[in-house]
Image (cartoon, rainbow, N blue to C red; front, side, top):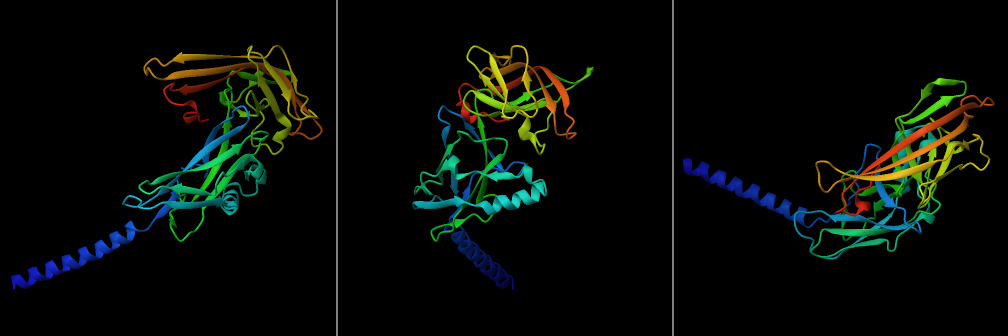
Length: 325
């Protein structure tokens, strides 16, 4: 009797092993292709692009061939723009605040040298080139390039969420852009010099290689008509700054005061020998009017003080691989 039981157990084990082997073979030969684009809490992938002299930069998006064995043949992965994914994200995230929607990056600001990414036999990763052309890109809007893997008989797009598609949030930077601590900027309402107002941070967005813009005073970056309050600041080699309203009509009546300037310092980290702290400090003073809160009744403000940005840089690694803000 024991021999019969032992025989049945062995037979069952062989059948299970055979089934597992067949399943393993099916998995091995299934070429699942995905895009390496880690999604953040806002549902997009921030792509940090250095703004160089001509505003052009080639970004390489990793394309991955999944599976438990080495890829045995050349694979040509077709990639295309996919606006529908962006539409769905906007509707889910921003609802009726259409002024805050992510905007699809216009064709004039990018090009694909090739619509195909080649993954060589014996390799599991290919690089898809995207040439960004950042000149005149207005960062008032949140620009996103939505991509997807196109179906093809030679491979299968990875079915898991956030693998087949990528929503690349375009984030250009220069030497002066980024998130500044603004607690040193005091903003006074007209007639109320005793109670200054401040905000914790203020972002400077790229305009060109030497210029950025920020929103005046305590104006919210999510204000519907925030365009009126953009201040362009140009950084000169001698440490001076030029400030002006981006709005040609200057509806906020922006007026710079004093002698705006900036300084940069580099301080080695006290405990990590390969780490440096790069500080950019701007000293500015100006007046402006809030013309949005009460229509027809502008509120005058004066802003004065300093803002500081810190970048922690490892000089052994290319800077473009470290900048995030």
